[in-house]
Length: 53
Image (cartoon, rainbow, N blue to C red; front, side, top):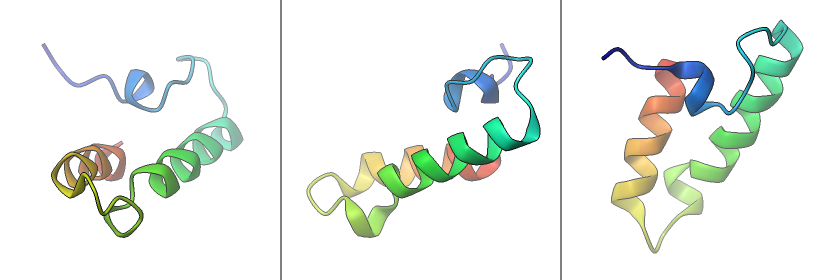
């Protein structure tokens, strides 16, 4: 099965560009490796997925 970037960003498939940008920034800030010292491996994996989306 392919990747579902809408699901990764927790937005509806009908989301407009502004909704996508907000979701991207929200999760990029949340999962940035520099902000997750205690769980760096998971943060790097999630951040990579967000960057791909």
